[in-house]
Each structure stands twice: as C-alpha cells, then as structure tokens.
Amino acid sequence: MSGGPGERTVADPGRGRFLVLEGIDGCGKTTQLEALSRWLPDSGLLAPGTSLLVTREPGGTALGLALRELLLHPPGEAAPDPLAELLLYAADRAQHVRQRIEPALAAGDWVLSDRFVGSTAAYQGDGRGLPLEWIASLEALATAGLEADLTLWLDLPLECSLQRRGHRAADRIESAGGAFLERVATGFARLATERGWSRIDADQNPELVSQAIGQVVEQHFSPAPRSLGLTSGDGHG
Image (cartoon, rainbow, N blue to C red):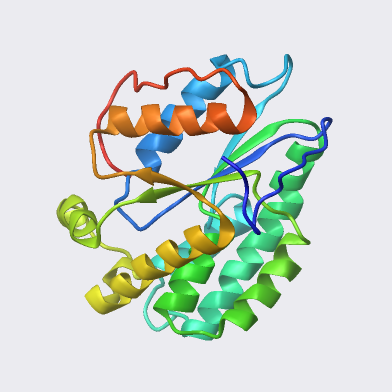
C-alpha cells in the first residue's frame, strides 16, 4: 500500500526499513508484533546480513523504561498532568530515535516498533485535548523528521478492546475512562486517513490478523505475497 503524508514512499536502498504497529490498547499489538518479528527474518524481504530491531514506545531505551514507569505507574502524587505527560512522551521518543532507531536504520537494519508518533497524537491530542499543533511541533523536534515506511493500524471497536482487557489491571492511561478512550479511538481513525496508514481488521482470529498483516507488508515491500501465521499463542496485546 502506498504511504501517506506520514510515511516515506521513496526509500534509500542502503537504508533499513521502519515498520510501526498502532492501535488502542487491547487491539492485539503484542501478539502481532511477536508474530511479525518471527516471520520477517524468514520472509525474504530482509537482505542477507540484515538484523531486525524490535522495540516499543514508551520504553525502548533505558531512559524510556524509567519514563514508562512514570507515565503508566507513577508513585504517589507523581502522576504528570497532560502537558507534562506530552513532554515525557516526547523525551522518550527523542532518546529512542537517536539511540536506537536511527542507528539501526542507518546500518541497513529493519526496525519494528510497538507505537510511534501516531499514539501521541491520538492519546494526548484527541484523548487529552492538547493542541495538535503542539504535538506536531514536538513530533518534528523529537523525530528530526523520521517517518515510518509503513504503519499498520490494528482497528478494533472500543467495546471489543474493553472486553479483551477486562481480565488485566489497567495502567494510568487505560484508567482514564470510557469517554477518553472513545476520543482516542476516533483519533486513530482520523490519523489513519490523514497519514495513509494501512488498516488491519483486528476484530478476528489472531491468525487471520497475522495473515492480513503479512499480505500488506509483502505488498508494500515486495510484489510476491506470502502468508504470515502464528506458531504459538493466541493472546491479545
């Protein structure tokens, strides 16, 4: 699928490829990230000698892990207000891009990330109601213009997300309430249209979701489609 305003359409042949999974909590990102990370090295898409970096936001660096704890499980009265929250996510991203993502891409390796700039726009923009121009400015600063080659949006109805997450303890973001999460879900749909993301129907069996992801990745990077299947597990992330 062709990239939108937020994705490169012409890539440096010596540079690695950057793939991102986005979506509301409970959409299955963890499961699909694991499946995709198993499939990609044997897919024929990576050149010989190419490595695959699997990472996430927040938490893709040592600094990011500390920031993740502050953002999702802050102690006592340490919970950040919306603006501080936005700045912490930007700090996590700046470190992530400079310390891990850019060096990997420059070396010709592929990077697969659980969340990137879209999550900040959806959660802190649509969800928290912070001005989108603030978020865009911080995005440009933190990424230095880095964009994903392909963003896969795992589209799941909010009610399904809540059902899937019913058995596990909610973090600070997930506990923000139904109205907040509805705004976030709407934000992801808006971003998918504006930025040309590839929509994946996440409201189906995980193996079918994996196959759909594999087809999109193949279509984006190679003319020869092949299937992607899970080898174990059927959980949702």
